[in-house]
Image (cartoon, rainbow, N blue to C red; front, side):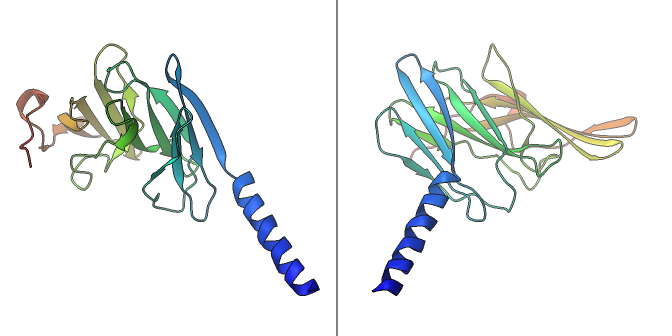
Length: 193
């Protein structure tokens, strides 16, 4: 009996410590509509978000062994609802970020996919800076002392990022890199199912 109680007590303490380690980021999606983003601690870091008094929406598993140490709420797509961005710096100055858009018609968040992380100069959304007046953002990264990558994106109504430009600067030379975007970075209609 005593061994059973000890095992039960350890299990309860373990569950409490997992919940105690979670960090909450409360914010207002818009007046009268709140959200709480919850990030659990490593080694199996998980992300969930609860809108208002609704149930928590589990976000797909987070990759990597770096702690989420950046959180920002911003209206990325300028639809009147604040979205959120999480980032992992790994102790450096480059925040590798994931962008989640609030979709009011669904009452949930969807992740904005990168159009081609393997080919882009920054290999993903790094250090995103969001335009305050239109649904556009830029990213920038540093490879070495004199090598940088720069990317610009337009946020399309369907929740995708349309590449406007990709550039790589090495020393004094700068070159544009082909990107998967349409000419002039215009949003294109996606084919239906």
